Image (cartoon, rainbow, N blue to C red):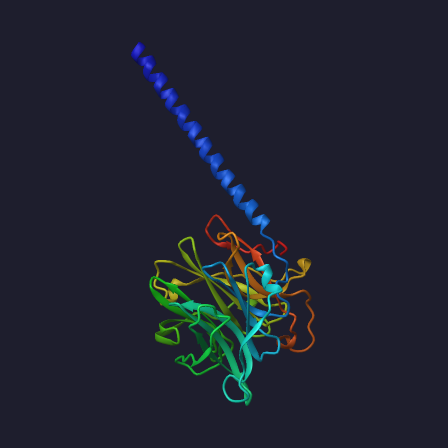
Length: 351
């Protein structure tokens, strides 16, 4: 009987300790979640971050410096600014790092520059037309081997050649499993419009091998005004490669969609890519956010919180061609991840 009571006491104490441990673990997780939410609440941005700058790109360097680059409203130059905080980019002095040519290639419609650091060297990918043919938009590259991209000399590396010679723009690059990838928008279908293509890169200035189409404007919300898929941007989280993109005309109908692939999938197989049927971030008139799009990603000052950088207008009605309404302002917002590991950009939450 004594032995039996001893065993029962032992089992009771074991169960009690497990219960206490579970409660403590749950409380710890709840506290961690609360701390994370509290940290996110403390991170606020003074939107718009930069007025009249569309297609924004923010690069956070290893030392914590933020570099900002975007489409200038005159479509005639590429400028850059730097700051220690995202809010600080709004008051930072812009520096022109490159001006358009007077004629020929790279002489009109200087659009959507992106800044990337690859193997210790800086690259700017951008699109440009010609004064003699303003809609002959193609993709080009600049390089700079200075430690600070605000210094040094920017060298023209020429056009990013693709297998098709057609309207192309909005290039971005990303690395995965030791391979460098290039994603961009291009006109490849007889019906017109733009699709998003993907290729591996032989070097930061040259593609190699196959070029695959991973999305085209198939849904109604991607075909308002124009058939458009453009502005890809990549973020890797939770075992997946996520790619946002923008669709439709650059007015209040502009919206952000989402592609994703498993991190162990063959990214050069179109079947590896999945697509949201509806936009994941779009106009919200009550919040005075119209036509959000051409997003990019960075990390907040805390080194942990993900930040969506994008442009939008504060009004809906536009006179004339929306491309020449320059009030697309750069904004920043933190965002969370849902229980399935997908980004939640907060459609109904104000900046």
